[in-house]
Image (tube, rainbow, N blue to C red):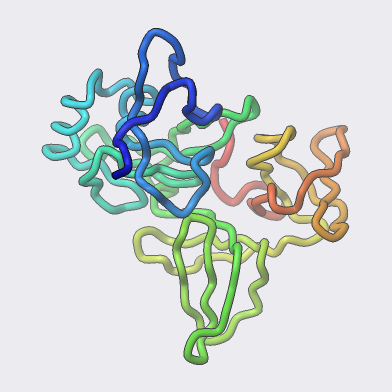
Amino acid sequence: MVKRHILRLNAPKTWTIQRRGITFITRSNPGGLKKELTMPIASILKYQLALVHSIKETKYVIVHEDILVNGVKVTDYRHPVGFTDIVSIPKINAQYRLIIDRDATIKLIPITKEEAGLKLIKIIGKSMVHGKLQLNLMDGRNIFFEKQHYKVGDSLLITIPGQLVKEHFSLEKGSLVLLYSGKHTGKIGTLQEIKGNAIIVKSGQEVFETKKDYALVVGKDKPVIKMTK
């Protein structure tokens, strides 16, 4: 049986938590994203938003208040909140998006109510199912289309929780990308060139090479939604 907690010393380095003096911390339920890109809602409420002080308080808030992740009410304190996910608390009129910051740690940034209905997500796979195109998205979602010219590595701006596609952004030369892993984590830059599994990115005056898998297309000339502090 999977334990409900993990040792703090073994928690992902992306979590900004106290490592020593307290032994355990809540473990996330399994989700579509890698554990380095997620954090349980209990830790979000306690360490990121400072709204609760214990698991008992967390459970009470989840049961008696509306805590929404991507527009859906959370019922489990171990529910994973992942990269680009939106946390909404209607009672205090607060909305946040989870990002990976320049110091390679998970952060929540406040966003507008309008943006809380939009999520930017990467296509990581596709296949044909019963004559329809199935897109496999970074957070574990699958979306079906009749026929579309979408490629692995492209990004979709979708509504939540409805999953309607508002815009499509191709991973191509000139696109604006946010790097969510590797030593350039948190940087936004313009894609200069694609070289197999690597890309050349220009961020400010810096030009560097990194893995194509680390890039999320966030727009053309500027990010289509707020993705950084």
